Picture 1 (cartoon, rainbow, N blue to C red):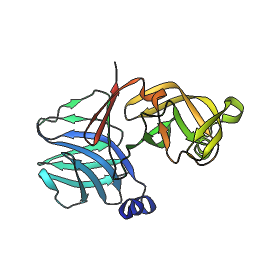
Picture 2 (cartoon, helix red, strand yellow):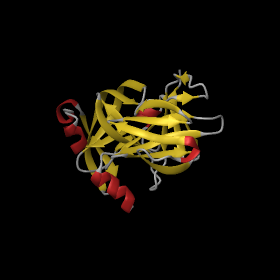
Picture 3 (cartoon, rainbow, N blue to C red):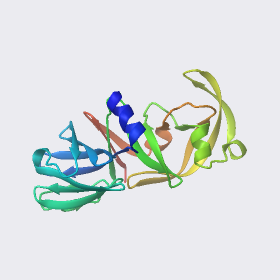
Length: 220
């Protein structure tokens, strides 16, 4: 909890969307980026790498520029931009399949970054939510005119019944996955804390969990 709070309070944390296969049996997930450090999930185990310091499995973090990391993997230098999902064999041939990997955090949540109408958003992947859901503060920050364009309704939350508005979002994207005309619910107040990436979006995709990793990819 202390470490997580430190990351949120001190740096802008970017969550996983990059997968790298170094060897046949090695998988790396870029799980977070912050000042001069990166959180990598290597074969399911979390490692914090500092710029310029050698890491496990022949992996070294060379640089962080915005949302791009530069890694030295067994002598080969490669750049990876947050939002990509790239599989690499030993000859570094890319797999262009549209797939996003989301790592389980210490609170048991699958948090990832994406965009609503091309504006950056942090999502909580929630297969139990029937729809994408966001609070009214999120909606205002995104410039959504939900009160005039949405359909008012009532919705049950953890704190009771709240006023909500059903709206249609032009676009939601995570990584290279981009879907249009997605139904969402805007709830008046501060709930939910994170934008819930529910089944109105996820229902159009293949979702598969392997241990601490959630794999999300297009069905076609």
